[in-house]
Length: 214
Image 1 (cartoon, rainbow, N blue to C red):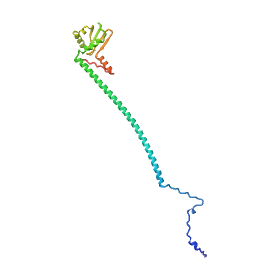
Image 2: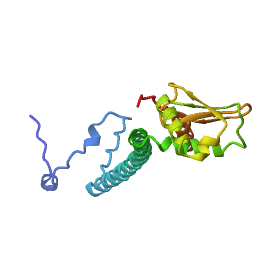
Image 3: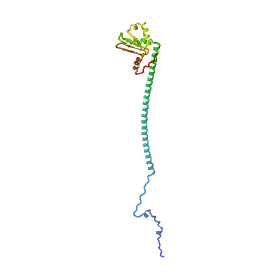
Image 4: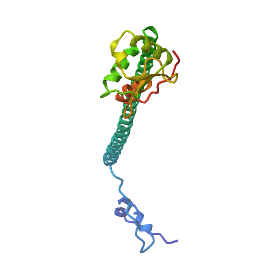
């Protein structure tokens, strides 16, 4: 058996460590390992994303709030206009109701006055006569029968009525307190209904005068 003597210098030298690339396949290169960003850089990027999202959210919120405010402002304006129109209609309706009540009350007062003081018709007759230029033998005056009797009695005491050349005609269609005076060319309608229409026409109304037998 042969023996080999190993020099002492070789025994004292430390063993050489093998490198990993020495065992790699020939001609094959390893991919370099990707370097991960430092944690501080990741936190900064995340903070920027959050800030941008916050800005966008605030802008969207402000826009939505402005849109809603504008819509509510328009709705409030429409409601205010509707309320104003409603109040105007209410006031107008109330004014019309008050006027209607006043006119009805005036009718009752007039009729009651004629009933209590029937000789008021004599003043109406004088006014009708004064509105004519002159009377002749063809003049007629139409009165309610009760007022016609009153005029005949007054003619015996009042020279003015006694001297008038007219014919007194009983007409039940005429309400007490009024008359209709006719000549060959002219007619004066002084009935209560006609006088009433003249008054309410000045008020812009067309309320009718309801005939009531007194």
